[in-house]
Amino acid sequence: MEEETPRVELTPRAAQLVRRLRAEHGPLMFHQSGGCCDGSAPMCYPDGEFRTGDADVLLAELAVAGVPEPVTFWMSRSQYRAWSHTRLIVDVVPGRGSGFSLEAPEGVRFLTRSRVVDA
Image 1 (cartoon, one colour):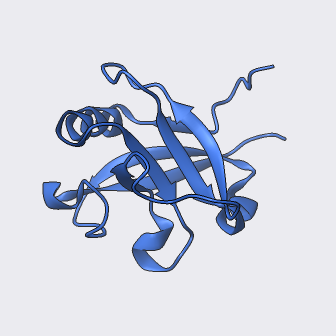
Image 2: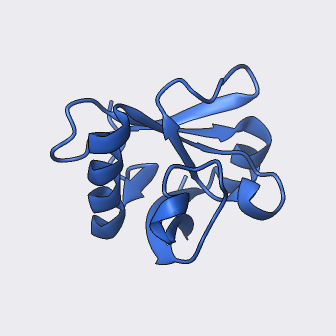
């Protein structure tokens, strides 16, 4: 049975940036590690460039209009324990985030906002 409330969603501005990044870099993925500083922000990579494993949870396969394949959203298991009761909303804000995330040269960064959801 499918969940009524998506675990992860993109704002229209985030979806627009994902389309641009997809056109330039090919299939994409997100990972949010829960580390300090930028590590707690969603990082966007070419799909498969960030290695995931048992320490990570796949939260969503995001369908983005204009992108032929889903964009996966992963989170470290330890971070997920803290955020499991929320819906994550990936947005874009001005500023420079991590140099490892694909949007860094764009002068913007992805940011996770959250809303508490009922269990």
